[in-house]
Image (cartoon, rainbow, N blue to C red; front, side):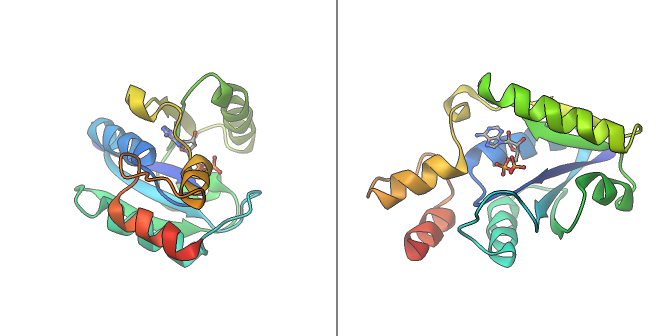
Length: 158
Ligand code: ADP
């Protein structure tokens, strides 16, 4: 199948869990555009430009992956890119309600866009950007969970 799928999120910063989802998505759809949200309800550690740069750097080895930023509704960005597929990651059960709510809201906003949920390999099931930031803040190592450049970038910020 050769299609474009959009993977929207905050990516503050990108982790190996996100990268796992990107790789899976690319195998299914051919091309994945990682869409880094400008406005988010989360308080971000990194600026939009930094989040985009870290994501670009972390995915440069994967063919047919592009990183863009977007403003406003994710569904509008999906349409702008002539796509109709949105990828989201599902980790443990705790993601389910939140992700379902977003998927249904997006369907209300645009009936033609399908949300596809992908799950990462087991070791990333409980991994989140906030957990990574906390571990580094407390002096721990996260080299198993984020690319080196991301670990360095968080250390420099904190
Ligand atoms: P958002 O603020 O949109 O939730 P995130 O960057 O936190 O942005 O997450 C983007 C998407 O990636 C979400 O669907 C989230 O569930 C998924 N995700 C985050 N971390 C992981 C992970 N470790 N494994 C799989 N999916 C993940």
